Length: 295
Image (cartoon, rainbow, N blue to C red; front, side, top):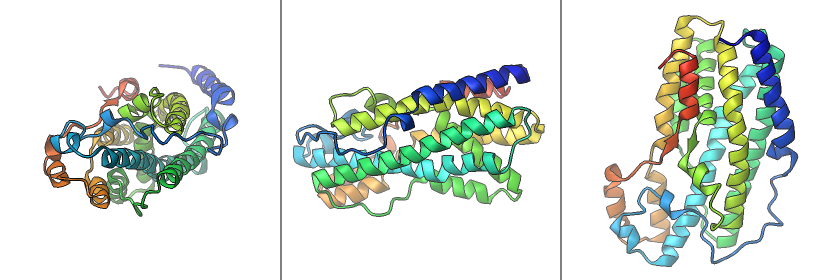
């Protein structure tokens, strides 16, 4: 068990790292200077849940290329929803409703710094969507409805106690910030895709690896003086949230396939249950659960 002084030192180091490395200090989220290459793919095909389906493999290449462009847009819109619906409200709650911790000033400082990052990530992601929409001249998808946001709202509505609602929000945010999906891991290392797609995910991945430490240690501070029941609610919510990031939702793809008139796309939708889910790397989540005595 770390002492108050130990945690204070860790939190100060996390803040120092942010001051030296956060994207917000080196990039303003504008893409005017990033060169566009019409012949480059906008997304890694291996990340599509239907990449090995016969209907996809036999589809005309121009339609597949357009699907990859939409895949990039879906990925970034999901990021926008997570930042706006999940992480930002959780950060705001820590600032507005101070947790019971001796290291409150340092906790709120690193959370306020993370909040700045999330605002930039939102700007980066929405800008990256519109960049590809414009360069590829694609019809706009309109409103999206991502499963995680729906699930969070339903879960919050089950909590009658306002403090528990804030705890659930924070647990879901911790899951978001302490695990890395295949999307971020692969796209941030793939310099064969469109320049903007590689640059955005590379910068985002750098910040998210820092956020993993921030949210893990803040969680320990938030929970250390709480009751067993409160800790159990946090742990159970965290465990329930992690698998949702590997969930493949085909409703948005049905819209995309219809827009592009992809041949035999109904077969892909029919076979949804047999398609692979995206991989997630949950080592940081598991370490946090171990520290909380939950594994």
